[in-house]
Length: 334
Ligand code: AQP
Image (cartoon, rainbow, N blue to C red; front, side, top):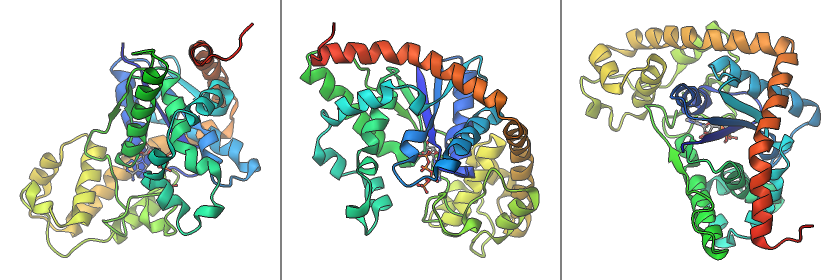
């Protein structure tokens, strides 16, 4: 049976990349009818310093974004990662399954640790192992993520296969498939077509935040870097034009169109015409999400109810799996 799982870190403001690459996809999958587990990755968030006074609010904010984007707690199980103890327990066992050589290849650690590897937390290094635990605890079959998570998903698949093989339990953990689909699996920075839109980019103009108001969104799109040529008449014409390609992809993802359809509509027109159309579309798509997030955050009681019920439902699935793993590994049990 299909089981979908994904999460977003509780590390601050969400941006258009998170919305198009992750949130919007979760809702589409929920609407296909498969069971959906979505968590707020607070344990992942603390791999870099998080102010404890803010972490709780950030956790609620991600939950609010899930609800505001259209996840329905009657259909999707929404929970904070740290509220289900099994995540930490399975992650430890997987730390003993994964090989150092595998983790050494992870490019996200290299990017995030930068020049200060020796001062990074050990958690930042084993982050993908915790992610494998998140996924395999629910025996998830599909994991919708942005392009940047592809390598981590491959590690999850390796851990599942090695566990099944080492302990002689073929098929115990299903080997999950990443779902990296749609026109916006890698939304790029508005200032640099070669860099991913990211919350850690020091330039706020590089990204559209889910909390930006209409004027800010319009002004960021107006200032977005482009080349002087009009939009091409064919999709191939976007090759070697990363900024134009990115704006077309964003338009397509927001409008629910293919990039071909966007080119059919705007090919031959200059950015003077395309940018205002994109800004209007971005504002009209994001405004309801932002407004609903604000409403939910004003009185977090509703969010807290959803998270508590979600954590209970998630634990009902995860606890028996981790119990079985402990038995397979040979841990003492009464
Ligand atoms: N630019 C992006 N385009 C498409 N999808 C993206 N995702 C992130 N950036 C883009 C997807 O969003 C989900 C949540 O990711 P996360 O919780 O791991 O957050 P992140 O990747 O740490 O977000 P940032 O902005 O990229 O943060 P920093 O700057 O810290 O690296 C994932 O499915 C991710 O693929």
